[in-house]
Length: 136
Image (cartoon, rainbow, N blue to C red; front, side):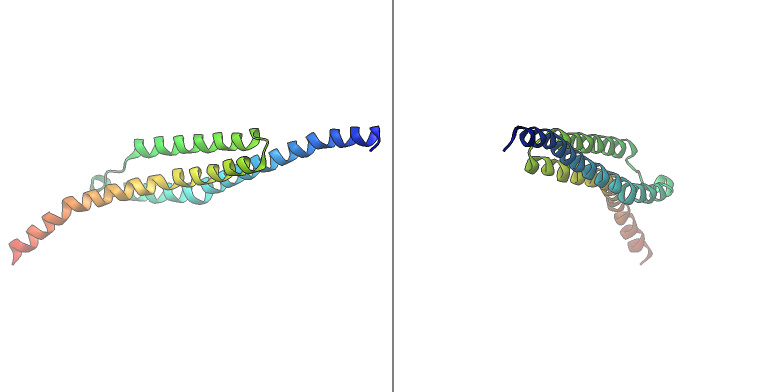
């Protein structure tokens, strides 16, 4: 290989590596953003509608907000990890972790609200049973 060909090959390699790193980080960022738009926003709308029930349901606002914030921060850190890692397999693992973490963070308010609803139902069912028993 000639000296010119070696210099061209060496100068093209970092550009290819940089492009691959940007593709991985961009893929992770796009998947996280897709989760936020397609999962988190509808979940927050559903939880907000459940919160409209007033005192019937205790929606865990603070726990949900902290879980979403922490989950999305971890997803952003995994996206940065996908860019920082040079080897392909660990970098794509970071991409998948970013996506799964953002999905879990997006679904957490729904899970927490459902748990609160089930807890409230446990309180109401004995009352309904006692009401039926007293009517008969």
